[in-house]
Image 1 (cartoon, rainbow, N blue to C red):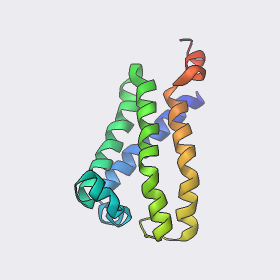
Image 2: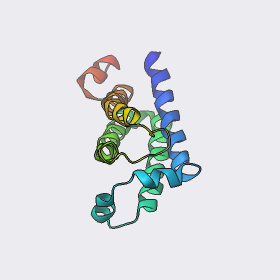
Image 3: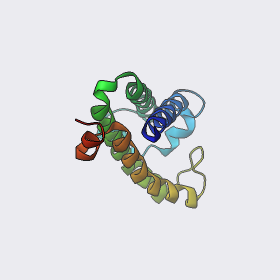
Length: 137
């Protein structure tokens, strides 16, 4: 039961964050996108924010809508959290203010939250040997 609650909570978090990326917090999130990301991805900051928001919505939805794919979805969510970590480090180092991340303490705390999010995604996805044993696979 705790895993089910955690799965729905993570899905809700992803969908809400994704919706915020596409709407009310879109401008604020652009501030946090590092310049090197636009060069690497050959696009602008707004497109990165929109794409990451869409990815969050898709991953959150897939986590609850595709139970047979749950281990892969959990792994994809974990990979997403790893992929955005360099941007979080950049935001902390440059002191870029974004919604909810307007102090050095909050930006630093966000860095320590990232491994928790990765572990959460792996756990609710049930991936790995532990997840397979727990689900009788």
